[in-house]
Image (cartoon, rainbow, N blue to C red; front, side, top):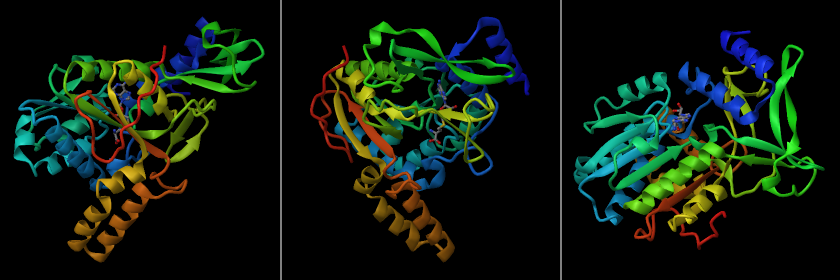
Amino acid sequence: MNAFARTLHGLIALEGPITVERYMSLCLAHYYATRDPLGSAGDFTTAPEISQMFGELIGLWMLETWHAMGRPGSLRLVELGPGRGTLMADLLRAGRLMPDFLAAASVHLVETSPALRERQKAALSTSGVPVSWHDRLEDVPEGPTLIVANEFFDALPVRQFIGTERGWCERLVGLEGEALAFGLKPEPEASLGSPPRLGAMLEWPVAGLAVATGIARRLARQRGAALFIDYGYWGPAFADTLQAVKGHAYADPLADPGEADLTTHVDFHRIAQAAAGESLRIHGMATQGDFLESLGIAARAATLKRQASPAQAETIDHALQRLTGRGPQAMGELFKVLALSHPSLEAVPGLAPLPSIPART
Ligand code: SAH
């Protein structure tokens, strides 16, 4: 057992079982602070790491949206959880198509991991755009804003509740002998109402909703938009989506605390509800495949292939398939895209406007 696992066991022995949310929160903080989890030597790979086309198309999305905002002379370009900084570097390269856009932009990275901040610094050192780092979105200065978050919400801790005869009972992590084990808080959470069936799971993304609400408030105050891409669904799902990934394979979420990536699938409906509370416009949800195709990924791949060797052309085709393919082995259908915008921004590229939905009361 490593030092972090020993501390965690000690904490539970002392305080009793902890919520799944606290477990995720402690494990993820340790996990992200102590490594670069991305790439073939790490635990998982993300869309910007698969191909430059992903970040370039998000860059085109940003250019067009900035244009639709009336080309403000000062723009906060914000990324939440930027990983290795690859998406932002590719996005800024696409931004060179419009020098006025780059001249207006300052980049703001919201990142808690010191290890990944270093990677981001290296990736963006020649971008020619001022870059600053923040612990929280609230610390980013006010002004017209464009936000992107890819595989960020799935990395935030959630509370889990299981449907019992007594109502929704919170799932806990405790000790059974020497091993971590799931348990249940005996008293139900009355405010959640009654479960649809016994054994149903309710995931409550406390941190994700706080971020979504913060973004919504910001976009209600000033012009701008936010683009979210994640493995997710339009919920509720009433299913356990907590999963651990280590070395590109699924693992037991309790087996190796702090050493595996822990994620849950994102309920985009809840994010949209947070935005509806601020009367923002909501665009999407669309699948990643449809979104990238409507932004022109096929044409971009064809252009790149014209200057490529046969081996490089094969890599481009493979990346295109991984990003847009519709089966369970690809990201095109499993990953979803949602955007929020200030009410003055009626349309954004690649996503259809969503008719208004009720805010959560
Ligand atoms: N967007 C990147 C990386 C995704 S991994 C990509 O697509 O490749 C999740 C990212 O979110 C990492 O950069 C991680 O350090 C960061 N992160 C996780 N929890 C965070 C939090 N609470 N606040 C800010 N960043 C966080």
